[in-house]
Image 1: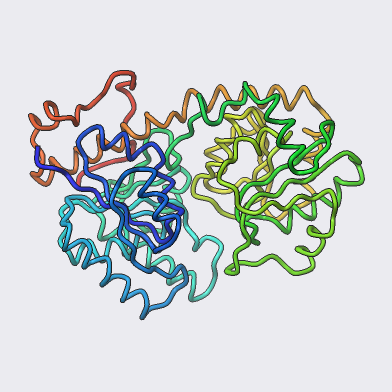
Image 2: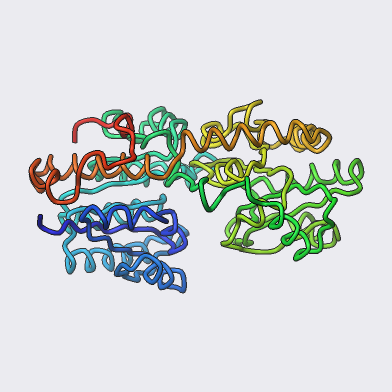
Length: 417
């Protein structure tokens, strides 16, 4: 088989780690994987970890027309040099820049992975610009993937894409979660104690955790409001906040100061080794305003940590309300506090929902199921473009269903190209 080259495009190199494990899976099946993103330490780390070539092209996250045109030209030059059969672009900005460049480079198969819709929390001209950006990405792509069924529904209701072109891989999520090894909550007793000791949290404390960007649209203001209600009711309660601050959507200075000055609040910054952090938690809070599919909710589930999240697209696909966690309205610190209090006051409820969450994620969100569905989509599109024959896919490493993967795992919602 002629080597099939796939170029993954993301705005920032950290997003390439959405593909953890997937790259090796596709390489084993005969695909030649490349990464393209903004330059930085994480791009180098991705290249070393996955053993793939990478290409730095500066892509600003903000809307900057002139710099965006420069980025499109840079991506186009890379694509014209390596001439991939597939360009697979991710995230809103990476999607539009990658799809425009791939269209200009006449890449045979163009795929856009819709991992979130920022326009849902925007207004005015910015909202319209973001909507049209999504429409361009969808229009230039041969296939659009959504990380969740609820995001697909929003995309259809907003007229971003034709129904036949937009699909959800397996049950959704960007890459599934490894709950058998990395996020395994059945082996955390010593890990829990070690992590709490590292951050100065007493062994007998109750811990509410948060993992994500410390920005307004992740619900940090509401979480701070819930914390003020809970800290007096539970003297042994601590709040563990994990993630980077970002200037694009800052939290109010007074909220930031209140968190930083509280000795029972632990702000530890960005941390990639998150299983020990989940192990230290009793419940995870994600009071976000918008999501694509929040992997932190699946990771917490694998670690047997119940969650309280907002009832917004993306979160509703990752939580079984009243079974694996609780869903509350966004922008409501009082309801958030009440849901967290229910878990903090009831160890048996935490245990029961944590166990149910782990069983659910093991059954529904195995990474291999999503990788297989994506592999099938690649093969389908390549065949449709005459780039891969049935004999090649069966005989040279792109078999439809490898051992151990259920045959019923497929991309749902896919149609004609």
